[in-house]
Amino acid sequence: DAGVIQSPRHEVTEMGQEVTLRCKPISGHNSLFWYRQTMMRGLELLIYFNNNVPIDDSGMPEDRFSAKMPNASFSTLKIQPSEPRDSAVYFCASSRTGGGQPQHFGDGTRLSIL
Amino acid sequence: DQQVKQNSPSLSVQEGRISILNCDYTNSMFDYFLWYKKYPAEGPTFLISISSIKDKNEDGRFTVFLNKSAKHLSLHIVPSQPGDSAVYFCAARGNTPLVFGKGTRLSVIA
Image (cartoon, rainbow over all chains, first blue to last red; front, side):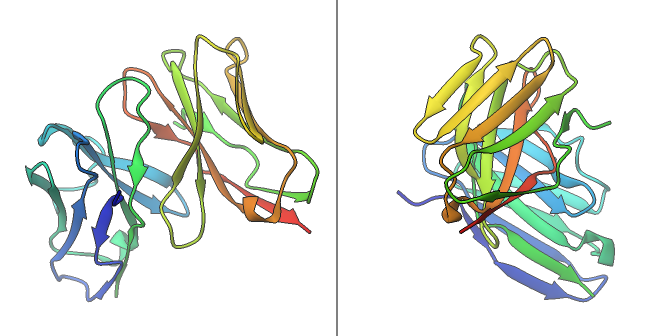
């Protein structure tokens, strides 16, 4: 079975540019999570969806960040405009809804904003 | 405010010996705990979990112990193998999504 697929794996762009990260969750999983990993703060939850509906976006750092899930098999995380402090590894994860269901992570997008 | 703490950023263990990774939490509403393992350039991989109604869960070389009164859990790996070298994350959930610790880097030395 295919796991969670993220693209691109690496992104290097200049400050001020729009960045779009993509995620395809595991088929049949109805919860999707976006995380950001930095040395200072570790793994932080940015936003999560249940059945394509955003449930909690309190972790989204600023209005420059937005996430969508137009259907059960695709989600995007967009940063506009990007800033150097957004440089991090961004992970997408998915799970079945229900207590005890572990999240399955993609391999992440390493984002560098110059 | 860190709700899940892994106070040891790194740990080195000889091959064949036991590795013990520790995790403390502060939120008494947490009722389910997980350990994830992460290799470089990959996403975290689920390893083992435990519900708050148990105090031990075992899966092969991996055992997780939960001490609710102390709000402490630990992951034991025995015997440790070089392939176990990775970053291990503790995570907890209750009425919230998973909250992760910052991880402990385990190095198993041959």
